[in-house]
Image (cartoon, rainbow, N blue to C red; front, side, top):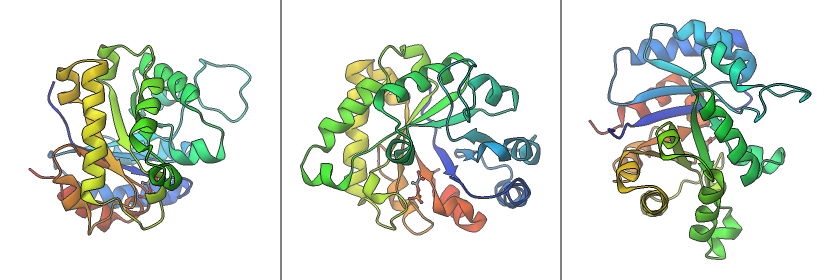
Length: 253
Ligand code: PEP
């Protein structure tokens, strides 16, 4: 299995369906035919039909920002993997720090959602990362190890081939503060080593590990040039077609 670069946008709670359509058309036009990386846009759930329609037959893939861990039932406000799949979604972000911080997401629910996404043929972008306090307390690696071990508990090596791990230090998300190239590389390398230990060297070499946290048109090239950073999960800068395009163009050939 070949390691793929994946540049994924996380639009969070931004853009109505008509705004999503317009922005996606701009992104599609600017990135037509590019193959150096996979291009994914994780849009708000309500935008998914318009987004899938706007990107049909293009190299831009649509993702969601969350998925529930049950097949169906009394879970008001939630969206199932089958619903996403039927609408043409290919990727789903799981365990974003905003979901952990504001919506009670835990390592246990991240594990359940990941298993459910994979069982339904979705690719999972699983987010891990430490807070500033945890970094200052020097427990970054311990914390990342716990998040990873719990997120992937019971997930087979075969299923892990459909997983991307996004290292997103919480203190760098939406703050304008980016991890240095060395800080980001150090944790991504640690994650790869952990995957080798938990699964195999083959999987560790093949898995895509993204960095996320104020990645932008200016700092992307340096971050993406690091050995263990295979792409980005991008919030703010994915809402501007020119900036997002520059990030895509920063992937080393
Ligand atoms: C994110 O939402 O995952 C993210 C990294 O946001 P930003 O790029 O805005 O920091």
